[in-house]
Length: 167
Image (cartoon, rainbow, N blue to C red; front, side, top):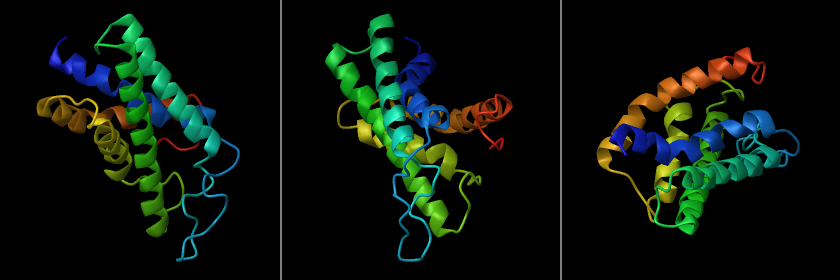
């Protein structure tokens, strides 16, 4: 597989996990409405259990489907593990970003350049690293193009009325 395609094929579960909560979210907030010691919400209402678990499920399933379509890993079980870790890492990275944004007193949904685009990606790569990784050049490619993809998908989600703001 060409390195550019390999990079995107590898990270696709994280991309799907990160974007799925926009559609699948709602319900009980992950922080249960609790506040941090600064008096601000830990994550906010936009981070919900349904979105988190939905994103984890979608990201993992995407990886399994990818493996069925094009066997990239030596086994389906490895594909499952890597996809699960990429999805989990993406969602945890997004939660970390929300936590930081709340500490900075930024409202939910407010753009934080860099944090929104790279937080989920770096976290996903770190979570999956012990099981499988991609070459450094492919990681660098993802670091460059992910902000553009993130921006494009946010605009699309806004136009589809899945998001109330285009960022």
